[in-house]
Length: 462
Image (cartoon, rainbow, N blue to C red; front, side, top):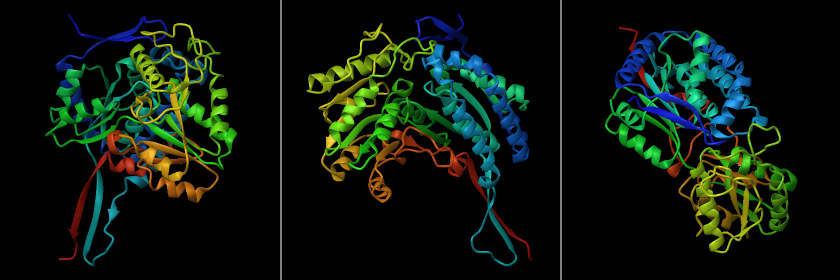
């Protein structure tokens, strides 16, 4: 019997899509096609590569009307938000725009008569992208676009929960006329993925997902010497200072905590508020949260759909129950149809009277729940923000830029925000510290992670 991957829709529990897993022979053939295609692709001028990428983007955006409800069926995001193509366009256009400059050879800093010396940036070869379901287009383009622009071939394995996204990328690249084999979408089992990573035939893997998944990737790739890009867990904090513009801060932090049902890599999961503005902030945060409408994501009125899988919602229920047992106070307690154990439908929740003995303040939630703690000063806030195994982003809410920089310098994180959160700027590197992973994406630095340096030391006068 042929092994298949089934996509169970969070909307109604139906099997929305089912695809056969590739045979081992098909996987090997895909890798060989990628290797052969990459050698030719690397000879294509960067400007020409960019034309293919932008044609792919145009083809992808043209599918918007089909893709938006498709995303809702696959992972539950409401159709009212229109997919992810604002960010996809911004990141794709920027990475294409900077490619020539970012990939230029770097001359030696100390010229010598009679010599030409420089470092060339060569493509790595075959890049494998293991993409997640939560932002299935945005997270994938972070690596697909710069990898191809740098002259690599790409093999995409998308999450089972968003199987159809990989097919959409393939359709868009095919319509753009990208040479065969340069980009390939594959459906693999976990065992096949591990086998492929351990084969020595992949030169770089980029994975976005759980810490456990990242460790499995590292273990599978051990001994191959491939390079790794791993964006793993997060528990992103916010710190609200006394001079914060309160209406702006509340609106943005509520959105940062609950957009996409809280299923954001850099979503806000814990908030520390200076005691001088704590009561005002909590009151505003609760009021704003109560405006959410939880329900069927295919309906325009819905502002929060189901979580992608019931087990993710059950984890949030467990974190809330544990926090309440330990003395936390819940403020929303919204009644939502089907909000029960074993269901992906879940109302947003705001907790106070929390502390770092509760899992909701220490372990990744990746769902619509947030804890708010009162702090006395910057020192206490910094200590609490750093009391985490993770470090993707941290946001600081104040009108004092220098104070934000001083605090940010001491926070263990990949990105420091001031007066905004939950956003990737393609001109800035996307990276993390501690258990959030390793490697870097976007910006010119992202190109450095998808190329290898090759030195040329040429004596011209002999």
